[in-house]
Image 1 (cartoon, rainbow, N blue to C red):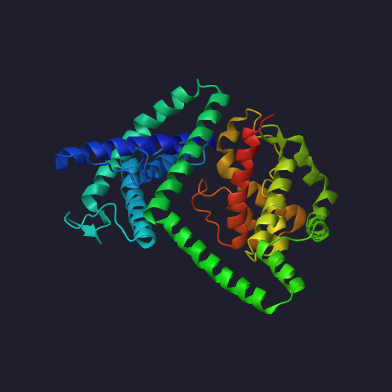
Image 2 (cartoon, rainbow, N blue to C red):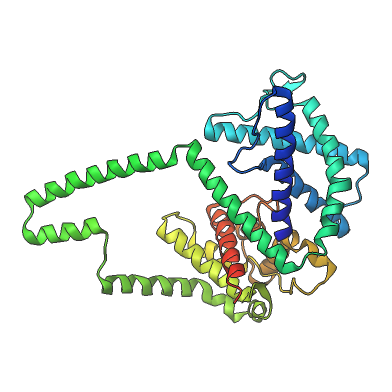
Length: 371
């Protein structure tokens, strides 16, 4: 997983360097081609991740070795798909375009064009036949702990960059301030009206409602009910010796796979309840408890583990079906929890989206808190 993070950032940066230099020369003035504040073009990073995934699948014998011509054709069509979908999504989200090929021959809605995709086909050859082999060769000599640290730093920087960019583009802070002012004004009017009409005891009750506080005994009662409900949903799995076997394997840092799935299940359960997402509690906890039910140590040095990030969701879903006879929906949820690494397994339900995000949060916390 960390290799994919580093690959994404590296190729995003190289793409930004290439586009900025090219556009600066064409326009004869500085052109920052990054979508985010930082010097990266994420669409190139997506291409690099796809290339790395194909390389690892080829090394594992799952994909055949591609010739230069096949790489060119794949780069041509993959670039079209990435550019068109990215352009469409950015325009729908932010009502803006970061590129327009309307003046280029053989274009489609100005989002893609044959000449630019031909260039990306040539770039795919450069990446697959030259850059990726170099990337893999030099990365093998870097200690694993060093790779993990760089991956975490890149993830943190990228997350901050995305947050700042989206906030700036959508005037996020201004909208929040306006919403807050509106809510505060509404609450003040309502509370003042209540104070004017109610007795002193009723006023104290209104104060408690406005402050959004529960009595300690009430909060404790709700906490116990929540924990009992989670226990009811999760206890059945501990009757399985195969499920408890996950306690033998380390997942992240010093956290076992069993501890990890329990954390993901508990946090997913809390997120669903506190944010009122209305996901099915039973299916949510079931998929979370079984999302890493692959039953092996992925740190054991076995060459087949190099594609663990890509293959273990399908293995976990298969084991979950055999051991607990889970539904098709739960199997799909398990298979999609590594998205976007497993690029074709897109989360398609509320349960899947919650687990996909919570799993990454828990993995990050467990890796940082190694001790």
